[in-house]
Amino acid sequence: MFKELDIRGKYPSEINEEKMFLLGKAVSKKEDGVIAGMDFRKNNGALLKSFSYGFQKDMLFLGAVPTPLVAYSSVGFGMMLTASHNPSDYSGAKFFRKGTYITKDEMQGIKKEYEKIEKDMKDGIKHPKEERPLKYNINAESAKEHVDNYLDSIPEIGSGIFDLAGGAVCGLKELFPKSIYNAPDPEFKLHSPEPKEDTLVDLRKLTIKDRQLGFAFDGDGDRLQICDSGKLIEGDITAAFVAEYHLKRGDAIVLSIDCRQEVFEKVSDLGLKAITSKVGDAYVVEKALQVGAIFSAERSGHFTFYNHSSNSDGIYASAALSTHENGEFLEFSQQFKNITIKEEIWHRVDFEKLKELLEEDAEKIETIDGIKAIFEDYTLLIRQSTTEPKVRINSEGEDMQKAKVGMRIAKDAINKSKA
Image (spheres, rainbow, N blue to C red):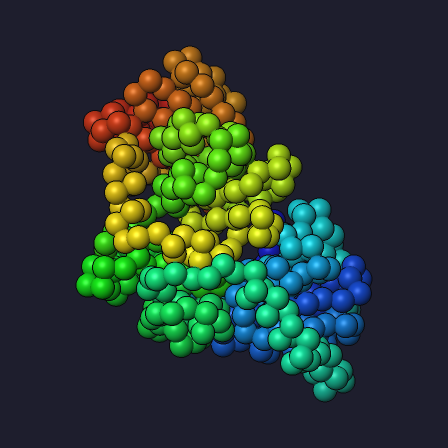
């Protein structure tokens, strides 16, 4: 269940009460207290209790709230029980300190403590529910103070239709003047927690019928998808929109490397400093904090406004952008003409050899995350999966023909660079 910066997996085969009990014990070796929240997934209550049995220290439970609220409230150590956009049979947890993600080293420290405790339990994992009291503190007054502080930090929301997906944002549904799928749906039977084309059919129809912008959240509320006149606006184009209308010349903005080259060029043309980061919200935020960026974004819809917090926040982003009129995002998006095609190839690649092959003709090569090669007619991004023996290829061109040429070049180079 341990990933680089969080835990996640299927319940109960990969994450269960016994493992959460051990996780609580492991975290207790590192932390004196924790502030916790969770989404509405059906197993979270039992998992939180199990964690508390193992933790046995001061723990304040905020209730069923979105991830950005937990991150915002994490002056010390914070934990959000969520599997984000994953299907309903998944569970997980994200960890925060001082308003942002814990570091990779901190996560490794927790994992090592977990493995040591697991090894020391000679009879295997035991879950002594009957031996330990429930330890977390449901202090309604203190929890309300944290929730109110977060709500006070959100700008006044303008018009729009807000799709809460039956996820964690339902815990704050009163914030939105008009919302759909605003009742908790623990098994996501009515709506997928992943905001994409085929799961936002109702929102797309309503934006056409009511002539209002649409704002859709993922399962835990740290991502945002904008819909304008029935069309979804990709995250990198939304980032360019923010750059033009909410930032000023000289500001630094961090974008994940998978954002289209057109967007990097647009941001630079506006007089902003566009800085590239690895894909992954934690990496984007880490880079932004290093360079003092005022805003960062991922193509997947993570947006962070650093005057507000150091964690991606779909709710804050929706409020900041809800002042715009219907049609503005769609009109803005039409200036981006490039076509991106994607493929996956199932084998591992020697990236040093691949780099040598591509840099013979490329105008520029970046190796922050895989290889990004910029050519005159197309831009290639080739990244190795961290979990499977496959590579992902993006080919961006001014038209479909040039994008296809780029894809052929990429696949030929990959075939010559098999590990």
